[in-house]
Amino acid sequence: MFRTAYRITGNAGDAEDVLQTVFLRLLRRDRNADSLGNPESYLRRAAINAALDVIRLRQANHTVPLPDEPSNPMLTELTQNNVFSLRQALTRAMAQLKPRSAEIFALRFLEGLSNQQIAQMLGLSQVLVAVIVHRTRQQLRKELRPYLGDRP
Image (cartoon, rainbow, N blue to C red):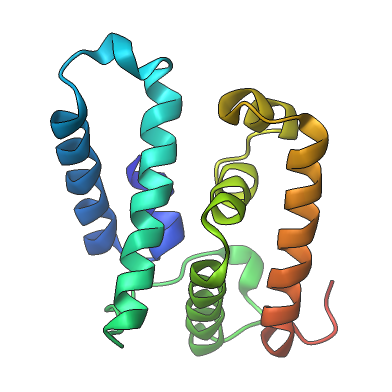
């Protein structure tokens, strides 16, 4: 859950807040874990939704998180400032997505689940998941074009 929240918020402090929020929601919801169905699926989805709530709240309050050091070796050609700017742009773009689209995108590309796994988890058809993934990628690509240049 922490990894999921961290990937979405880009900030360890916010990710910890997300964990607290999820567990508080879980306690308030029901003390019977059997009512969750698949606990792993529930916790992952709850972390995604709570992380997106943090991003949306941050934007509404016009606050900027303290940056964690970018450490992705695949982005060595970019300066740290560009990486941080790209991360901020992705965070802003994800906050603009519809909740279902943001959740599916996070499950697919941040958590690495297949379209089939997502469809089963959310009770959707695999075709619908594929369509949402495609449209969401197009929307994010459009939003991030100034940061990516001509790269696909």
